[in-house]
Image: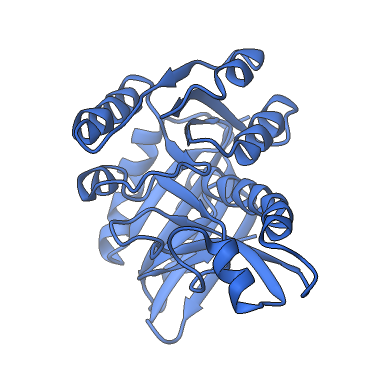
Length: 282
């Protein structure tokens, strides 16, 4: 199947959709699905088009052919092969529920990705990785070795042609340099409904505050801790009888679901940045 996805972000003006559909018509393309959004506040326009071509074309060829329109409308335009599976590198520490969920969803065909490797600063999940025949990389880290350990991660990203790095409860704060190197292609799951309870031990913070709702947030990684553009969130109701440990158990399920949704949205090219916010097409 010669299926492709075109995503566009640009200043909103008349003629954008007309020019895009005209380009597709010229190439005898058939639109399978299209979604658009015009932000009245930022005056930005966002578009995602899933289309089919009768004759296969390379991504470079399509980009070159579309360049005239992209320049005309000052577009950030990207074209992707809709059938190509994204390659993931998962980072994890000692909480493995999100890792286990991503492995199962991928293995069972629910998540259209290839998990190229797992990196951890502990050895706890080497056996789990082996059971799924996924390479496991033990990169221990201390304050003294952080720079070299993060370089190992970057080397692996390059070596394995990684499209997305997933922080599946990786409990290390990334350096500014690593955040910049992975900008736009690293997703973190934070175990609270941001912007509430940032930082460490959010379930204990929530328990002390006596909240009635807890949640989880998947966001892009930035140098500002837990401040990256939010991709996906969900919540669960809790009550006064629940301990911090009980909140953690409930929250673990929410985290796994939220992270899987965020990963799917990213690899299906449904997310466009709108400043420090996101447009997520369903």
